[in-house]
Length: 184
Image 1: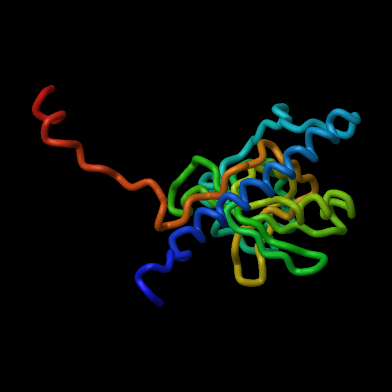
Image 2: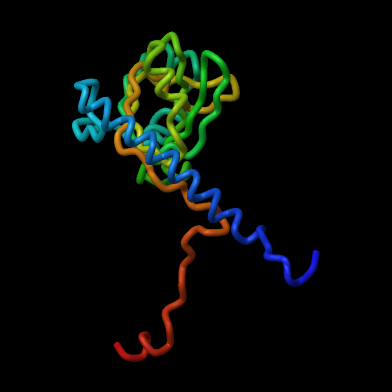
């Protein structure tokens, strides 16, 4: 490669991010059109989560799977979708709320087509990382022992138009400058 040729490596991440933003804005436009047709609300604000991830892990993290199933603990959580794993008729997603703790405020959702219905599951498949979700269901443990919410109702709250920052672009703690530290 000669030195006079422009490098496309530097332009690729920005163009990829612009493409993601364009796709997400198109999804938002679709939500607004559906609202205009009386098919839902683009930005619902009536979902009130009753539980926080850290508190659920603290209270039920050590509970055996069979005991959780017998108790049928109903929960309502909300947070940013950080991970999503699609597996046919069943999928997993990880929500992160602001509760922090040992689990960093994360709880896994177990989403099945049978539990939430065909339309809601199809809508779930179109959700993006970074979207804010509200979920209701019962607590369960997966085969690997991870505390999860078996979702019976799932709602998109605000849609994320920008992708989540990656580790290379994430905000970093800055040291205060010497001038501002000495002027106070």
